[in-house]
Length: 230
Image (cartoon, rainbow, N blue to C red; front, side, top):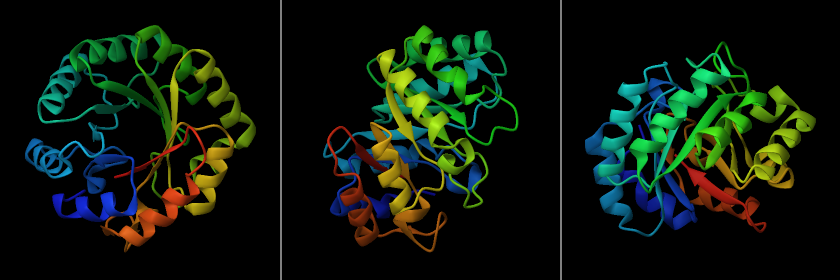
């Protein structure tokens, strides 16, 4: 779990976005509202707070309620996987409902590079644009050390970035990324680069290290690219 005690290290290391999740509960496992409120209180406006809200069963009203609660608890970004949205129409429906519930918070729609069902990554930019959300993200569902860049290949991932940005979306890339992968994602034009395991002493289920975050933030130092730790 991204524990409130990790906030000082993440901020000291230079993370631009603090992502709250329970990494033991899946790729985008949701932390409890109490943890989210505690993290937001400790961040105290020094960086935006992002809330992961699950890998995404196709339950529109349930997700909308989760989004509203996360925003009330202090999230400026809400992040939803599209594992259960197997068609373009269903993805647009889910994302549209989430956008309405999110108010002023930015909505991050997530497709999985190693999808075992759910929306194909190549379909996400158009679905996100039609739903009116702000960020299209690629992640990996299996946290087995194989990165999203390796799963999709730079040609497909570059096409994803170009299409999404042409539609006015920001693009986030995550998925078992290390420092060299962060640099590759930056070169492909990612607006946001997400990391967890590489930022922790002890891997994905370990604790955030200010030194590790600092190294990753330096790899993200190019213009238009932000680092996210969570």
